[in-house]
Amino acid sequence: MLTLAGRTAVVTGGSRNIGYAISREFAENGMNVGILSLQKENAEKAAKKLTDAGRKCIGIQSNVAEVDSVKRALEKVHSCFGGIDVVVNCAGILDLYKIHEMPAAYWDEVMAVNLKGTFLVIQQSLPYLEKSHAPRIINISSNAGRMGGFENGMAYTASKGGVIAITYGIARQLANKGITVNCIAPGTIDSEMASVRGEETVKRLIGRIPIGRLGKAEEVAAAACYFASEESAFTTGAVLDVNGGIFMG
Image (cartoon, rainbow, N blue to C red; front, side, top):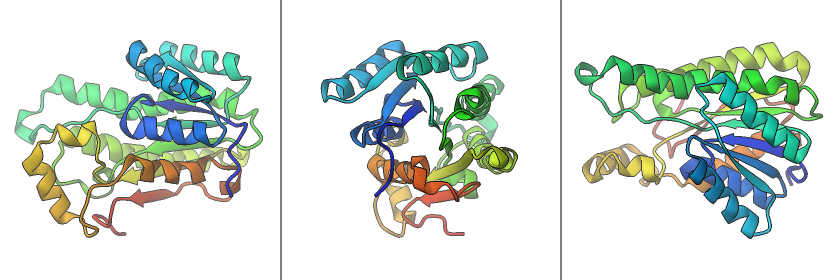
């Protein structure tokens, strides 16, 4: 059994897909959850689904690429629940551009959300996490960050590789504070993000997956529950591959 009940989590990108699955799983296991989304309506709608089911949840608009926006969101979560124990960095932008087609502005946007946003949320959450008796940081990367991917653009690949790199570096720096920093690297998950790739692309991806199917968001959420738990205290700087075997290493 994992100790999750009574803990408070912040989940960026928590209103849809993997982020929502993590938020829901946390809430159903007795955690307080702050769902952050760029769109206020999406954040509040996702939170309402959980509060209507009797869970403790709040939805907050936040742009993870802007430090003041991150600060305000974290302050709201702390004010509502009295602390923050777990931070999940799931907000992200997919990139499907070919190398020669990539607009420089879109490269910057992907990096701002996927990589800079992950760093800013970690940085601004430290004053809260330092007060927790079991503080946890969980970063969501991708198998693209592990081995380059097959059907995605290089901004996405580079940003997700960067998420893994800062997981290692920040885990080392925060270990003496008892703050664990771990990463989940999903393969292609059956979600809105996968659907934008197109049916033929998804078929090609499934053909590369040894298990022979797309992953489920709930399977990523299950991995997040371990990293969020009090029992994971001796695990830090780890990357857990939830990918059906498309990358093994």
